[in-house]
Amino acid sequence: DAAAAAEARRGAAAPVARHQPSPTQHLEIRFILTGVLPDAPISSEAAEGPLNPCDHWLPAHTWASLLQLTRFPCFADIPTYFKLIGEMFKQAYLSAELDLDSLPAGFASRLTPVQQLCFVRVFRPGALRSGVLWYVRRTVGTDFELGRDWVTHAYEQSAPEHPILVLCDANMQ
Image (tube, rainbow, N blue to C red):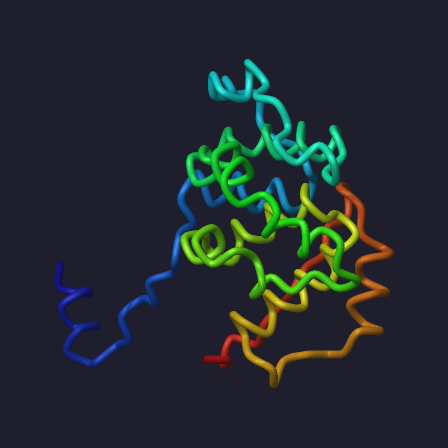
C-alpha cells in the first residue's frame, strides 16, 4: 500500500507494543481485587481437604482459603509447604506487620509479586494494605510512594465494586 510506504519513509513511529497479561495473570489480579476465584474444578488435593498441619496456630478458615488457592498452578504445593515448613510461616502469620520479603525463601522466591499478593489475600487479609505498598515499592520504586495515609484511605474506600487502582505516569520507567 502506497500510503503505508510513504508513512514508513517519513519515519513515523511504530506503534508501542503493550504487555498483555495472560489469562492466569488476569485471574490472579481479579482474585486480589475481589477475593473470588472463578468457577473451575479445584485440584483433587483441595477437594479431599488435607488436614491442616499447623492447626495449633493456623485457623481452619485460613487453611480452607489456602487450599482454594491450589486452583492456581503456582500454589498447588501449598499443603506440602505447610506440612514441611509450616512453622516458618507461623512467624509471618503472627507478626504485627507482614513483610513479604520474610516469607520462607523456597516458597516466596518462586512466586511473582502478584502471586505473593494473592497469598497475602488469604493468609493475612488484614495485611493486604501493606502488601500493596510493598508491591508498589518493588515494581514502581520508592520515588512513587504517596505515603501510608493515602493508601490507607484508598484501601478503606475500596470494595469489590470499587477496587484500588494504582495509576502510573506513562513516562515512568
